Length: 236
Image (cartoon, rainbow, N blue to C red; front, side, top):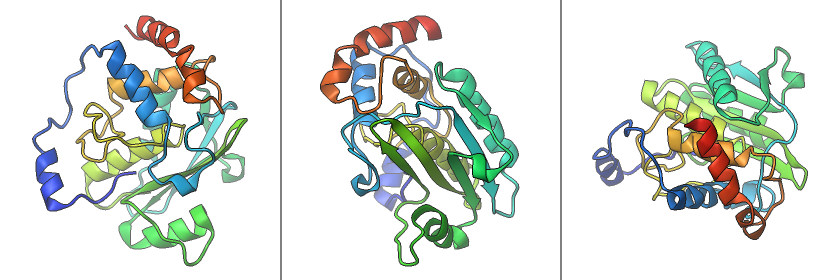
């Protein structure tokens, strides 16, 4: 989740390019990136078994609830379709009925953020809403059952797009952030607001058929190098 940075951290982050040039990543970088994002949770109390794989095993059905003054649905729709194209093994669609959705995205203006989180994410009147935007994932050993993201629309284009990309991608399974991932949106100190090549590699590894929900780090390590090689071949 994209948190409000202190002035010092924000200044430090600005030395990084807004969109680092795509490059060839080493095997070690990508394997470490998978572990740092797929295992662990930014907010651990939110989900089942933080150190086991979480992913959708059934088709993802998105519904965008636009509650902001600006209609952000065209941007969300375009990004969701981009993810579908770029992540091999992920099946997704945008549905017209929210009752059919298993991934709900609420686009809100900041004054309504807390209310929407309480009503639609936690369904608790006194719930707290950490972060600048967030996603909650409900998962078990059979895979992700439901994701709910809240994206803030009215604090500038950079923050909107950053929140959109990070929360949608995290809602698909890689739920942890790590400050060392400078080429990723899964790092609250990076300045990316797009689906980077590095993150495409992570999602493509996660949605390979050999990676299953409930796998431990040891389970994953038995197959991940071979998965990565095939992902490289497919994306190059």
